Image 1 (cartoon, rainbow, N blue to C red):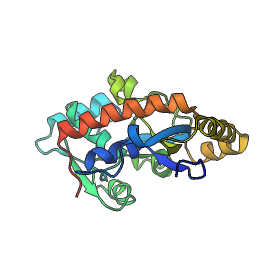
Image 2: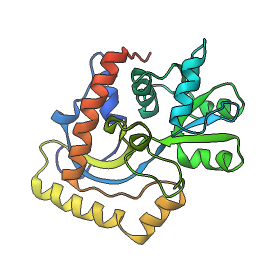
Image 3: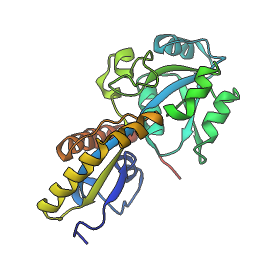
Image 4: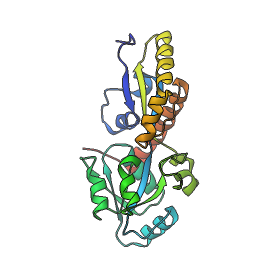
Length: 239
């Protein structure tokens, strides 16, 4: 019921899944109202140590020179998947290697069985520090505190379409009273901006960037337009 007592912990995949399904049970614009973003997980495009590339230009050139497409792995159907397909639409000579286990791609990258992944910064940090992975760029519009010297995809490629994030937010059922939505927005924004919440995010290599309902709606709209186009053009299908 649209009574304000049930709040959805929404993630970026919400704007992707509806375009992957033949008959989706929901439609973001129709069924949900954004409340607030509490943080986002930055996706880092990293290559395994054996790939001779330190930046996007070198990775792109190396991939182009190979007779065999580079192996780009990740969890199917999520932001890392559609983000990889977007890079391939931009000309990256790679093939998507799907995984059902979210931990599998990172382990196979460190083991040299994949050439690259786009994954969360937190999971990659220890391998990056040990020299087992080489961060190429952050798939976002802003550099991240945990990897301040790694450029964003927007910087590296000069393409604003690569400025997306894996966000975490609150959403509520459409039709909920505006007074209730406004109250939930204030409470969620205040909680997300608290020192405790900000500290937790930074400790876990998350970006504690808070957005109100209007800001989150703009993020939703940009993602819906971007991912619908990518899924259609790349002909993505997830079984």
